[in-house]
Image (cartoon, rainbow, N blue to C red; front, side):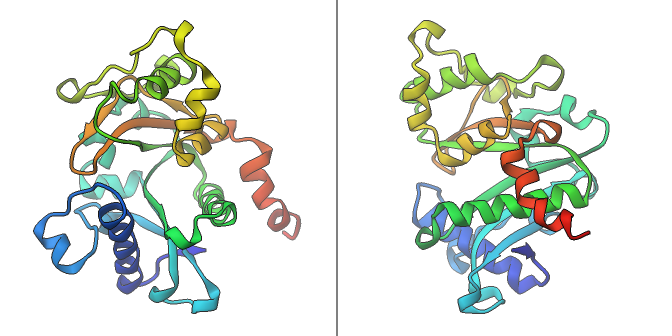
Length: 251
């Protein structure tokens, strides 16, 4: 795994995103995307693209099987905003001292959706976090579907059990705000809720992640989004420190 080094590798990540989001899920491409079969937007050129390669297929664009798009403060300044700002008021996150990192567009080729591939992705993020001294990570994570009532259990579980501290709590923009407090806490069964949470969201929670106030329905992607916040100092030994232990021991 490494950061994309060429325009061709970025386009390979975009092609993978298109296959996963538009051909494999319910996202709706615009005409320009459908013509080239790539998922792209105005943020891509200001981000780093973390790529997982299948070495048996080489080390070029054709070997990309997983990707994560990440943006630091400098990239957001050049673009004019973070991607999440279209859905959430992230002023509290932007004012956080130290470097921050927005995570997004995570996907893995269906043939490679194993625990090992996800571990490689997290290992890459761990190296990136340590290399750039990231203090805080955040980004929109999605639940499948656009009917919040059908997602009442997982949304309510996230609200009652993992709401971010007030000082770090993003809030969905008023025009897009959907309440997550859809069931009383007494009616929320955590085990049942965890079973229906997407693996990526569960991964953020295992890293000590929190969620912001309010969900946002993204009809273009066919999802309901929540804003996740992770302070890297809360990350457990089981993840970042475990993944980087061997490298650090050789330093």
